[in-house]
Image: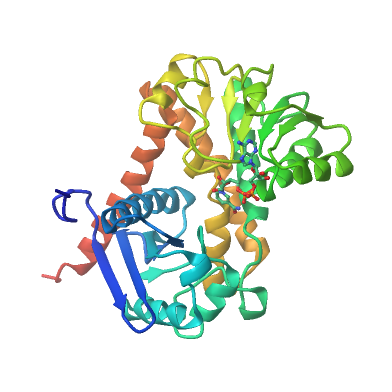
Length: 360
Ligand code: NAD
């Protein structure tokens, strides 16, 4: 027996099931909170084995976006959508347009974007039927590759970690290990080099390594992520897959700071406390990798790279605030980040509530 949406008690505001038999669309939109503004988050197109698996994913992902958006200081709540199906065989223009009509029917309570299984050209099609969509191509007012500001935001978070740990917001003379030098990892290594740090990388794709070797011969390369976990580093920056901090790696990780772009770096709850117990400073992934969502949120106001970058700058201050709160309360940074996000959502909800109260 599986639990219904209400029985799960997840605190979601709204969950919408969308079905269009003509195009084969089966989608679910999850809105965790719209206290801070319309829910913003991507659409994941994935061949879920069961409807229950799709519901679980959309509930978790939309809640995650609420926390990420609240910490990023953007005027958006948390939303996310899943389309059930195999994007390589089930995706069609008709299905995307049908999906766009459902997004439109929510009247702007949910604003969509790309996620796994969806890409910029899909958002362009959706934009043909609704204006509540981001991650469009630049020709349609989109902000281009969000990795640019994701990498910049992670770098800003890393500087805040450096200040908290070593008393100076500088990576000069520090050694940073980057696991995964794809779109974000490659740009991040350039920020680190520019600021006077040294870098060691790994990647499972030879092409990604070759690109680094050609552009930056001074960067060292190691065989795999395990080699980075055991290396003498100042900062470990996971920029590939989730789950890299797990029961095997956390006990042997040598870097005193972890700050990277990968989503869901902690394999399970409680590992943040273990990292803290080992004296390792962990910058929560959803705090420091928010540059991408900051970039797409900016599209809604007529995209300006400078404005989006200025907002991504603030990841430095928020990371400092989170680390200081964690230290003063004796809690792991992820718990401190959650508290700050929850407070921002509560404050916004009570402001909305008092604004809605009838005068007299
Ligand atoms: P990407 O696919 O461009 O790069 C990931 C890189 O990791 C690839 O080069 C891949 O070969 C490498 N990789 C995969 N498995 C590996 C392994 N086991 N060991 C070492 N390297 C491995 O992805 P990206 O856009 O750079 O995103 C990186 C991470 O950041 C992902 O977890 C993503 O969810 C997260 N993220 C990205 C953005 C963004 O704007 N791109 C925003 C927020 C979060």
